Image 1 (cartoon, rainbow, N blue to C red):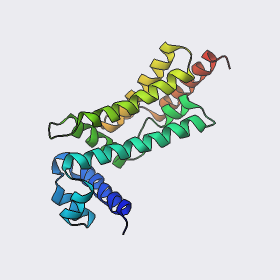
Image 2: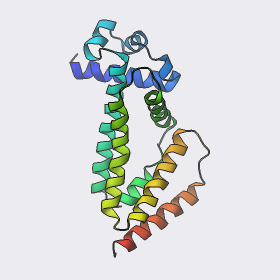
Image 3: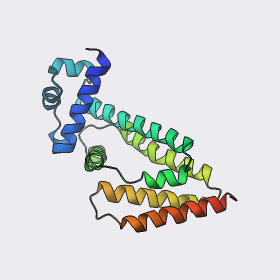
Length: 182
């Protein structure tokens, strides 16, 4: 088994444990057992719990990079893509992001660098939106609506009516197109 496969298995096990039991349940032993590796094998890839969490944060940031590319290449445009994807698609995805954010807020040795990585994801969406929408107020409104949809979903708050969300997306996308002179 190659190192990247083992590393991925460890991160998969960590992700499953964080979703199922929360970040406080994460121990090196629990993750090693769930991944089917020895504690030594886990330590080879991740020398600490904080290093494992950093690996998970990096994985989430890599997924976000893929999403940035998809938004830029999308026929629907960055604004519509951003707003449409601002709601995690599954309960597991929402729980994962909420758990990672909770872990980053904790005082168990998670690095400020990890908080910076997550902050960078939010900042990059802001940069992309401001580059796409010439009106800075409208760009910021769109960013805040997307952040609100995202944070509401991961916090488990009641979802807005899907028809209303669709109409919000349509209206903001139309306003962004008008601001670009289309």
